[in-house]
Length: 150
Image 1 (cartoon, rainbow, N blue to C red):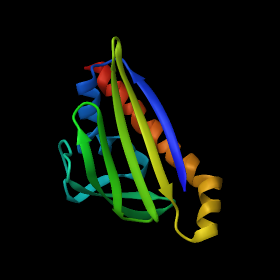
Image 2 (cartoon, rainbow, N blue to C red):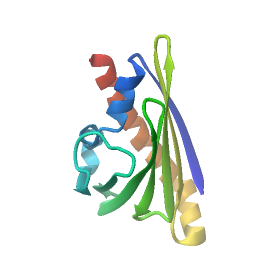
Image 3 (cartoon, helix red, strand yellow):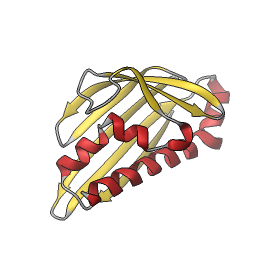
Image 4 (cartoon, helix red, strand yellow):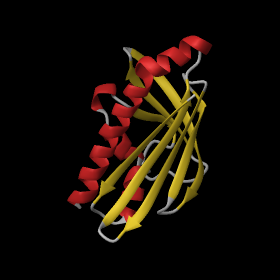
């Protein structure tokens, strides 16, 4: 099992950052090379606690689906989604937001476990952690740009 921690400072109010981070339409813009899109479940707008979202994207040359459920939400502070179906053995993404005097500190904590036992563990170390970190950084860069432009 691997955990990735990222923090991004955004010069924008916490409410704007929180709403952009949970906006399905914004997420679909965040990575054009994987052609990510939401299919059955919530497919647009702001996700809420209890929502189920199925993401379809191209990863490693294959069309893949990942279904998550928003399991916790505390407006403008925190939300969490957990994989309920997909390629990983498990995955959880915690999104935290801290209002600061001059902006917002946005933090991601993603914990995942690849399938296939020892081979999955090797894959986590060799390429999956780097791949997911890059994906998150690109997404956060878009969120930062959108939040600061408004």
